[in-house]
Image (cartoon, rainbow over all chains, first blue to last red; front, top):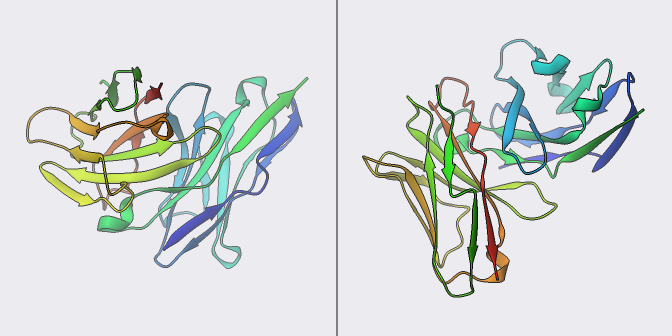
Length: 115
Length: 115
């Protein structure tokens, strides 16, 4: 069984400040981990993914995440927030075989960026 | 190179009617997933299909819901006798399948409103 916990349903940062969105996972198999972004009334866009290669993963739009097995975490960071980063962010986990390939999502974190 | 296509984008049905949602995966993708997003919630897995096969339907309600992915044509998610609680955004995702990292690409979604 797999699950994801995203701490903080709403996060507000100033433009130019560090963005930190937290994600902890639980998985009975070696996990694949993902961060997706969703803008209002749109589908999900993949930001980055971890699939057992490098533990520090770089994604699009300046985002990166670090897989920490000992902490079962996969937090998303960006050094400097931009107004265009305001959106909902979802962390997701899947297994690495067959029926485990379905994504299990967290409840999401809404990021607000203020001037 | 077209992405995942879903239609219709918006669908309005009265209670008791049928809703039929379509999903065309990305070119070269033979794995399709359906997810449902209720208002203010994350996405929940419904069903995983490959051509002519249902691989995992553990997230599908036991009644009124069915899905197919025929040899030719789009994947169809069918909801019979819709009720107000079916109002949600339904997202389709496609992938090449494991072991290529299970990267799933999402369509723009169908927003179902049941009156």
